[in-house]
Image (tube, rainbow over all chains, first blue to last red; front, side, top):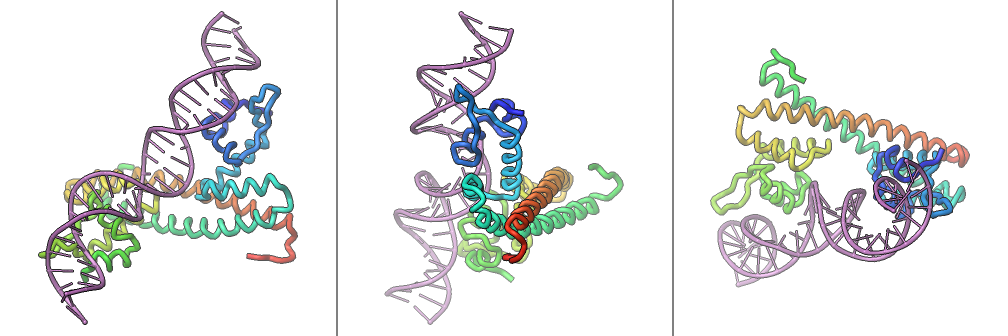
Length: 124
Length: 124
DNA sequence: GTAATGCTTAGAGTTTACTCTAAGTCAAGA
DNA sequence: TCTTGACTTAGAGTAAACTCTAAGCATTAC
């Protein structure tokens, strides 16, 4: 399957502006038809979804850019990419643990407030 | 125990600029001595730590401000505060789950690269 | 034949949360 | 007395990641 930028935008949940911006920044390579119109493929979709996972974990555009560049070069950059991912993973794991603790703190707070207000009615 | 802004800054890991900024924004109330110099207390410390947990979970300054305002008003705002925390919790749980999935995705990627490169040397 | 959708460049604007600067004052300690 | 650390207001600067605008041209579908 292939998609126009409008369709693709809806599918991946990024605005057309952002898709063009990402392309300009080198995060994606997109094919064009005879009229220079962008044709997004399922491969592009997988790639974007992968990028969005990296973004979700807090990777900066700068690092995603670097990762994409290496990806475009080819197999000889695998070690660099792996190193980047491993380094990033460390940060993510820390972040994850911090979030877990802060969530616990939040739950404690909520429990405290519920006790203070009396537990007759549980209004979720 | 009480602390000057300099000491407090080191203790809680926020710059003096940021501490004054938070105070101006209404996130903390700080006592002053006869010379108008800020005196931070252990109560301030607990409060800031609590705020930082909310910040960790991605709460905006705006919401933290609202929460602090209600806190300063007193017990009659407990329900509002509880509602805000519960609403926020929902977002945090979603975010947490998203992060968990993206972390899994990251791990899969790393495994993929390690297999591709051969698992003879594990360089962490 | 016109509306919808797409293309370009270049640059301006937005939001959040700080972060810093300037310019001046004040008070305690060695 | 002089350095250190504190205080004030007011506003400017920063960084990231978008987000949008303008102006003009091309193509496709009804």
